Length: 293
Image (cartoon, rainbow, N blue to C red; front, top):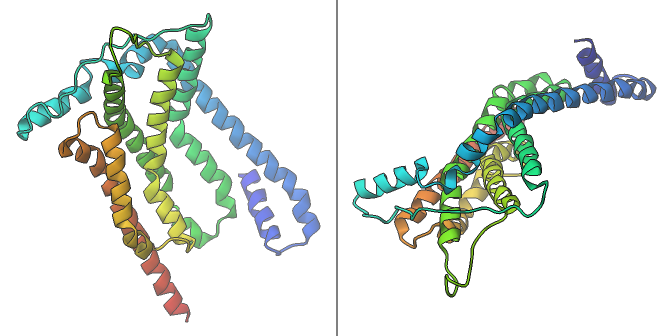
């Protein structure tokens, strides 16, 4: 509490409420607070990383290699949905019998370290957001603090929602399509991907989707700053939808419209949520401007 009080005093000085010399002296306290935020964040990541490393065999078999297994839940659900809505086997993807190779002595150990580190960051993500918010909090005014209520929950919610979408939706479609894609004679090609390549792919898909699903939060922040309006998002809606349809056509294994729309629908909803958020923020900003005028 003492450090936080000092940091609040520091930001007040920066705003000109006290002389510049005192503000410069308090800058050391500001850096000290930052150091402890970083230390606590690293410790949180380490705790989760160690827990994952101790269970690395189960994590690798059930989680990392999950999208490549025939009994993966997404394959079952898509196939069941396809038959239920009368699309036959359109969404039933062929099984994958992927064999992964390691060409370096330390390959498996370094891959275990990578899995533990990335898993630790993902598991500690809400806590990391909380530490960032605690660091920024003293710089915010009382009115600004009201608008940050629940921000950690929503940032974490959209990130994990996106990560789940990437893992359960995009990863199975992507790996199934790429693995079953043929070029020339199958007797000539022997497809055995590297473990590092596979890990990079699934990490990029999962984390990339998590970041992409932060679009509503990004819209909220940009709209609050006056850099984004709902009118802008509405005017470019058709171009955004076309881009999403092209992306769905690339990653889905079959060219039918059903499988493409299943991938696109969550992204369409995200875009529309961003429009609604931007509209609400713009409306509040216009109301405040009218009151001030």
